[in-house]
Length: 186
Image (cartoon, rainbow, N blue to C red; front, side):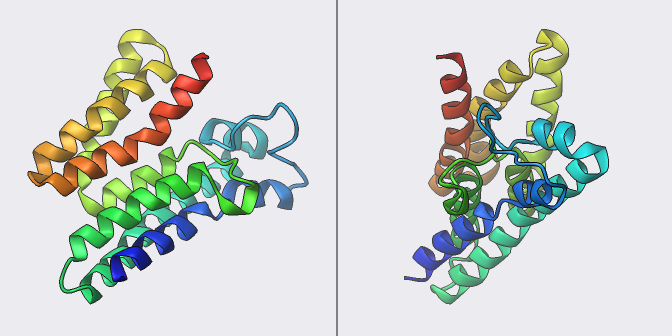
C-alpha cells in the first residue's frame, strides 16, 4: 500500500504545472491554441530567460521531491526505500507529461526527469546529458538527441542498478519522451 502511495504522491508532485503558473503570473497562456506542450524551450521563449530558468529549476526540484517522498513511503513499506523512490520518480515524469491540473496536457518531463535522475543516481543524469550533447553535436537535431537519450536510458539504468527494478525505471521513465517524439513525427 505504501508503494501505491509513493506512486500517487510522485504523480501529483510531478503534475504541478510550474511553468504554466509562471506564465499566468506574466499574463501569458502557455496552453493557448497551437502552443503545443509546456516544455522547457517554450518556457524560456515565452517567459524570458530568467522566468523560464526559474520555472525549469522548480520542475527539477519537483523530481527531487518526488523521489524523496517515494523513498519515505517505500521505507514505510518495509525498507523498500529505493523501490519507492524509483516508482515516485517515474510517476513524477508521467505527472509532468500528463498533469491532472491541465487536462493531461503538460510538458515533456525532461526537467522533472533530470531532478529524478539526480536524486536516484547522479551518474544516470551525467550519462543522459553526455549522450544528449554528443548526439546533438553530431546531428544538430534536438529531437533525435532526445529520442536517442530516452532509448539508451533503460540500458544505462539497468547497468548501474543491476536489478530488474532499475530496468523498469529506465523503460517507464523513457516512455513519455518516446511517445512525444513519435507523436511529433506523425
